[in-house]
Structures are given as structure tokens and as C-alpha cells.
Length: 84
Ligand SMILES: [Zn+2]
Image (cartoon, rainbow, N blue to C red; front, side, top):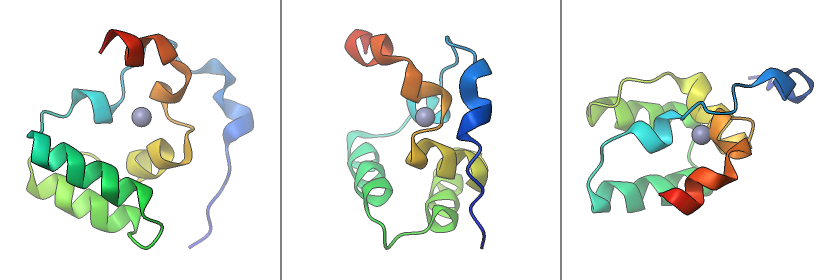
């Protein structure tokens, strides 16, 4: 699979957009598992997406990959991390 870097198109991101990672309602255990999976290079975005879908978080592989690569809406909203 070819990963296309679209970072140069990201300047127009909506600054107040909240990504799926913050919207997902997960148990603390699921949160921990998800963070570990996102941090592991051995686990594909496809696999993470399948697990999230099984948890009722209906998102696509592309948004998982974007969040992971730091080109997601949430990566520019540092204040949300403080507020959360
Ligand atoms: Zn995100």
C-alpha cells in the first residue's frame, strides 16, 4: 500500500474539529488498548479500524491512519488536550 503524504494540504484544517479519538466513548481499558495499538508499528490501521468498529466506533481506516501520522484535526488543537 502506498501512503500518500498530504501534509501540505492540511493548512486549511478546521481548528475546532474534534477527531474520532476524542469523540469515541471507550472504557478505560479500551482507551489503554487503543493507545498501545496506535503506538505499535506492527499493528496496521486496518486492524485498529476493525477492532474499533467491533467496539461500535464506526470510522474508516483513513482517519485512523491520519490520526496516527499526526495529520489529523486533533494534532493542531493542543488546548483540547489541556482542557480534557
Ligand atoms: Zn486525531
